[in-house]
Image (cartoon, rainbow, N blue to C red; front, side):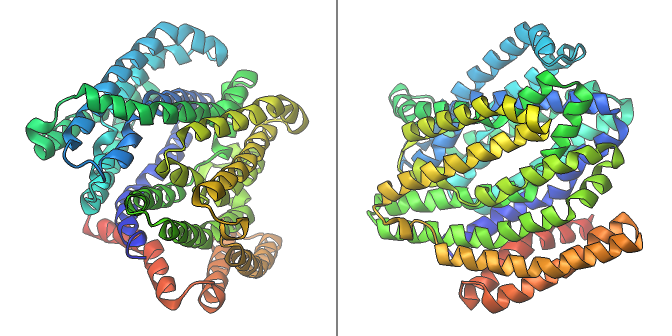
Length: 498
């Protein structure tokens, strides 16, 4: 618990300070933008996110591999990453500028091209700044990384929404995005120079080693981004912007899940890399099993809660205009449980980046061959069903590879017994919540009451069963409770101080 979850709590707390504001931004925009303009906003940032993931070409993530074990030339690794990402950002800006008209045709959205140059400028500056918190985390400066995450998220939301509040419209938001990205880049360069000094200079020999690790991983990421966004592009192509907005809301990402997964995964990778260098494979397996079980104790009940409350949650957050998003959302949230099985982190520690390429090709193939058929059968919900199916196959193949890498039997690759107990506890806790929800709906009470009361009943039942029957020690239960509670306490303290 000390090696993984204590630093993860710090990172998670930092990310969570900006959680409420970041989560509320699209909810705010959905209320002030017409549905079609909100769909255009979602399309712009779909393109942004696609290029942002691909254009890093694995360089930023390579720092998790090199900085913990190569401290003498850390400045070379950081400078190489900054230089390559800066060049990659310029290429993206040029690509967006040249292809903007064609992109508008593909999306069947004639107003989309006018927003793409600003999105490209924001992307260019953001790419070069992406290594800021990564460098801090890889050098075990978890507290600083947590604070940087928090301040950065709060500023980002402010820079995005303040121009909208003053001037209105999507263009104003994008100008704010450009200003924020430029500010963040300046902070990144200042931090790197202050920490590495004259050692912050590119080195060709070091770069060759980074590229040997990063490029196969970049291929895997490119294919992963392609399969992860293909369903969104398919819906954008076959349906109008307003329907894309409905689908995008259904694919609502829960930021807390990503923050928990990313914070824990980053720390786990650093710790595993140290153990691998020391030849302690058995300890790596135990960290993997322990982390997977503890994430299951959080993610599985979260998925069930979201399934129970999906209809009222979507309409409360986004209004009844987006009620058609509910079926998409209910399918989409099942991937949260699979996200807790962080197979990619283990494979990256063992430099299995080429195998990640193969896995993502398989996943892309599953999506590509099933999505049109499933959309015809299930309308827009079929697109997310194809993605879930591909993810299940991906995780199964990744676990088989981890079994080979860690040289352990299939019975040990996951904490099967513990996961089964988590599923049982969750199922029992869900029963009274479902009953209460049905009674409140029959009584015709307000949606907010139907959302909050069953949620509280479910939470109380799960917490009681967790402390009685969860398959971890009392000390781990206390530490896990702190891990979940501390970010919320940090947010509350911050709000009180404000």
